[in-house]
Length: 305
Length: 305
Image (tube, rainbow over all chains, first blue to last red; front, side, top):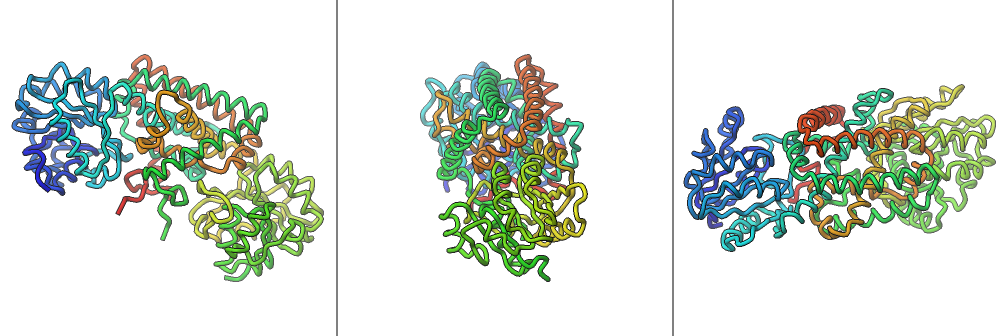
C-alpha cells in the first residue's frame, strides 16, 4: 500500500499507540513512525521491542517534521501535551488524538493549535484490559469502529486522509459530533465501566464472603465484570472526570431502572422481571448480527483443549 | 470408566441437563440416561438429536427405576416437579438438582421426599447465554466448580457418589451450607446478572441514542454486559424471586458504593477513583491465576482470521 503520511508521530506509547504503530508499519502506511512516552522506562521498552522506527526523548523532538501527530495519552493530559508540542508542529500537519472523551479534549487542545495545523479528533473503540508498551498488537482495530469528530470548518482533505488511515489499519469509520459522541460513549462504555468497577469493588469488600470464594466461583457471571474492571486506572479516572455530565446522566437512569427491578423482586412481580429479561435478549442478537461479538458458547471463552 | 449409577434420570432438558447427558454418556458413567421435558417440542428435539438414551413422555415414567434423579428445571418449578415424581422414586435412590438457589429449593423439595430416598442438592457453576435442548455440550463443566449442599444427616455414600459423578464429568467440587451458598451466589452471579440486565435495558430505552448506535459501538464495554443479559428469562426470574433477600442485600451495598463513586465524579475526586480502580485490578489477576478465565487480549474474543 502507498504511504498515506510521510512521517507519523505517536505521543504516549500504551496499548493504542503501540497497536497503531504495529499496524501502520505492517501495512507501510507511513514513511516513518516516531514515538515518545513521558516515562523513560516506557521509552526503553519501546526501543527494546522495536515498537516504532524511532523513539525520541522529548515530545517536541518527536513531532518535528511529522505530517500526522496523534496524541495517545490519558484524556486529562491532552491539554498539557498539546501546549508542549505546539511550537514543533509543521504547517499543514494534522493533529489528532485517540481520547475516549471528545468535548473536553477539543476544549483542552484547540487553544494551543498553531495556524495552519489541522485538528481532527478521533476515537477508536477498541481496547483490552491490558496496558503499557508491550500490550499492543496489529489486529486490535480489525472490524472495530473509529469515530472521527471533525471540527467546524475542518479541512476536508485532512479529515479524509485520517479516515483512510484508520480504514487501512482495519477499522470501520463514522463521523460524529462531539457532544453526541460523549453521550453515546457514556452509554456504551463509560457507565458500563463504572458499574463493573463498582460491582468488583463490592465483592472485594464483603466481610461474609471471602475473596477466595469470589474468585473461585466467578464463572457464574461475576467474571464478565472483572475484565473491564481491570482496565487502566489513570485512563478511566480521566474519562469520568472529563465526561462527567453524560456519565452521571446515564448512571441516574441506571439507578432508577435498578430500583424498579429491585422493587419487582421485593414484591414478587415475576411478570415484570420476565418481560424485562426478554427484551434485553434482542439487543444481544443485534450485536452478534453486527459482527461486534461472536455467538460461541461458554461466554466466548476458549475451551480447554 | 465404571458406571457410577445404573440409571440416571434428568428432568428438564435445557443447557445443563443436555450437557450432563452428553458428558455422562461419553464417559460411560451410567448404564442408561433417561430424559424428560415438559414441552413436547423439546422432547421431540431431544429424540431427534439423540440427547439421552431414552426420552419418556412423563416425569413419573422417566424416574422409575432410576438410581439418580436430577431436577434440571427452573428453581420456581422444583417443588411441583418433586411432588409429581415422588411416587415413582426408587427406595435407596438419590434425588439431586442443579438449581442456582439452594435454600428455596430445599424448602420446596424436601417435604415431598419419600422415606429411603437421599436428597443431595447441588449447583454446577457453569452456563452460557444459550438455552434449550440443542445448547448442551459435553465440555461445559470442564474446570468449573460444582457446589454440593448436603443436608443434615445426609447419607455419606450418596453424597460421595454424586461428587464422584461431577468430578468424572470434568468439574471441581466443594461442599457448602445452603444459606452461605445463596449469599456467595448473590455476589458472584445473581447481582451481576441483574445489573447487566439493567444496563442493557437502560441502553435500549434511551431516546437520544439509537439502538443501532448502541449495537455498533458496543465493543467499548457494553458488549460484556449483553452476554449475561441474554440468559434465559424464566430461569433468572425464578432465581431472583427465590434468592430475594441475599440479592437485595448485595444490590443495596452496590448502590451505596455506586453513589460514593458518582459523588467522586461530581466533586472531581480523582484520587478516590484512581485508588478504587487500582484495587479492582487485583481481583482480576486472582481469577486468571485460579484458572477461571484466560488472560487473552481483546477481552477474550476470538480474533478474526
